Image 1 (tube, rainbow, N blue to C red):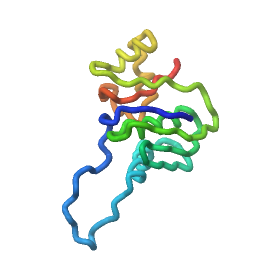
Image 2 (cartoon, rainbow, N blue to C red):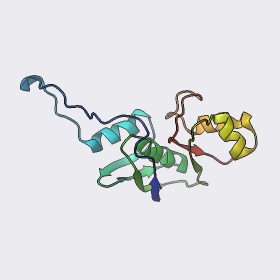
Image 3 (tube, rainbow, N blue to C red):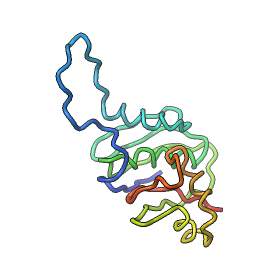
Length: 154
């Protein structure tokens, strides 16, 4: 449990910032709250968390229960790597805690190989970083500056 800082102007664009054209009232679907959009993002990644509750004020406050720290950390990253989110306050309970991963903020010019070389001393260990960040990462080359990644112990 703790407080995690993210770059507020980097990340997935999940909040609709444009005003939609007025639709007929009968066809209009109720708009989701920002909290519902954030919970949908966690669910979209298929992260196993029960009792998920997300509150958005000055920061995102997330509660729930996971089986492992890896799942807990993925929830934190899924929420924090969203444009407009600068801080995630974690209140997730873990059933089977294991050592926590290190979080790393991607810098301009980084690759998973370069990060693996810096963190593990071996650029060929980049698949461990890629696997640790699935499903948020769909391809090893699809990282961006400001993105936060899990760096598990090997």
